[in-house]
Image 1 (cartoon, helix red, strand yellow):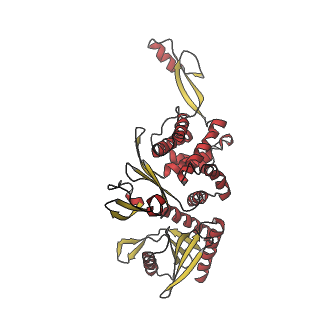
Image 2: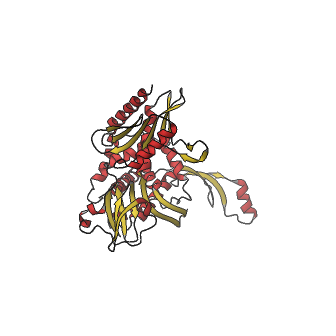
Image 3: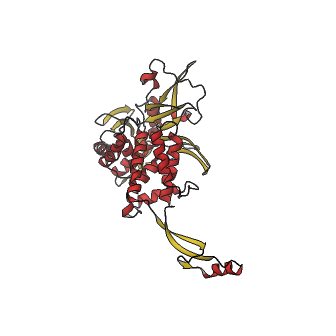
Length: 414
């Protein structure tokens, strides 16, 4: 299978090997791929594609695999992901983690290959310091007393004529715990995703580490994901096994962004692995807004508002509204768009929101990869519309500047 590597919003014609002929000889695109890419042209030679806001691994058909990497550096991309999940992370710490993968940049040409290598490197800590084990209650029949003798169960066997066996119960340390099941499941996913595109050395490395967990059961469903999230959130691992946290964070990243049909261990189908950067960006901006808003103001995410007073079936849902609780009045309507640039439709949508809600200010927020944030003001009747480009190259400064701008907007309405 041939792999094609693009960046967000990059056209295939920008790649040197496709500059003279920017068409893939594909005439039947996988249905799973259609939502995640843009077809910009069709010819007898095939189709011309462009990446969109979906970052990930997308099988186009049985012959071509598309990987879309973020425009931002890997550590910035991870920061955005973690920050959107409400986690406090340090860019410095993420740089240390990513450096492991960057050392192999020629072998791992995109962000997912880098993170795969980081995971494999982190897993070496299990071999160095040992796997996580927990006490497991076990009942066993045998010829030797081990632990507590279960008299009633033993007598039942004796009455039935089997006097050579006794039944005992005991606690023993077991690797078959949710954390190790999550790692085993992740390695299985990676083997499925990358089996045709990785070198034999890397495939063998994945298989070797997968075999470390032979005595760990394959998950029966996806419920273990919630267990792992709680373990990380509440820091429930023993200090001697704290290195599992970084491993599990990476495992969750691969698991939660994979499109999986899961029925049983023998019936698992992985269609694609994608991160919707628009959703990530929306949640990231929401978390910044929450931190900058104080009483009497509150921020609401996706409030449902009827478009017409007498038609409840027509609903509009702006990304966020900032309301003055004392006045019971919406002050600012905010939409976050993970796009290269604003469009006419974006303005029309925001104008619809502010007209229906009857507020005087709207804010459109877009990402930028320039050094500083940028803001432009537009006027519509007596209303102000701001287009704010938040820089994703210096998060600490950018977030503080956006929070200050929000305070400025609220002050204008007091």
